[in-house]
Length: 364
Image 1 (tube, rainbow, N blue to C red):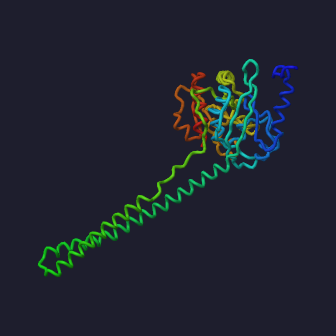
Image 2: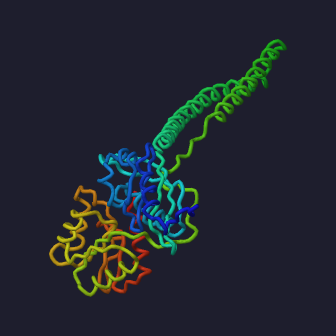
Image 3: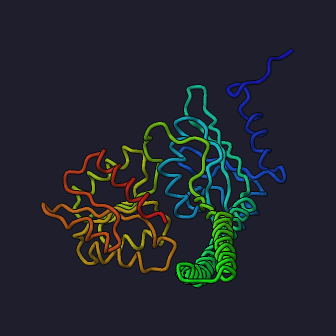
């Protein structure tokens, strides 16, 4: 009997079986390479997103994610998959072709070659819309209950005030009368009044306290992102990204391009703001590094056009860079739509830190 074929012995057979998974209904599956590019997408998953399989294969998975999910995928989700070989139940939002979000839970396992190098993933998607919508309904119901409880508390406070005040006056005046000269019959009837009033005050206090204690506490709303079964144990390098580099000075551009490529990122390098806008129209970028001092369309003017474009790239994280000895403060740059700042003495560590901060700060 022939031994069972291994990946090295019969790759075509195994690849055929792997690819056949993506045709099975109703499985929601996709597979990505080491750059996050979609190698295969199941028919059901493409249909749920409003695309054909052919429209999705070759695109990057992060390009069809909502901004917050994209930032989390680049800073945590994909690095964990590449490093550890698996992730489980990460809560993401993908965007349908019509722009509507689809909340999902994503679990993924890495497929490696004989040398241990990451080749591709098998990623299983769970449609989380029912659970997410149910959770939102619970949150909305809890909010309504909280608002109703607030109104009831106000009513109870008013009721307590409106009844305790005259009741206190009755008890006070009855106490004064008790100290005066009264016939024995009058004193006996007054004692009954005082006894009934004290009992009424005790019953009222008990009823109001019970009603207040029975009001439901406000339910704390949970955040839809991120949800995963385990957090990263250590900070991992950022996932490979597509970075737009718009720097006028040739030496500075070469330096930053070398740092970015050494970290595994794809770089689209341009020399001025007009070319930067054209590059964004040509294809998506995960992050932009833009020179403040470009001729023609300056860095701030370029960022203003990006933010006011109304296009899908309007929320791209932007890191300003400057060769000046005293560049503007980051707080001032944030007011102009920028998310980070690189000085002339940029190192791999400072570059990655600014990229991470820009990604996490820009995501809503």
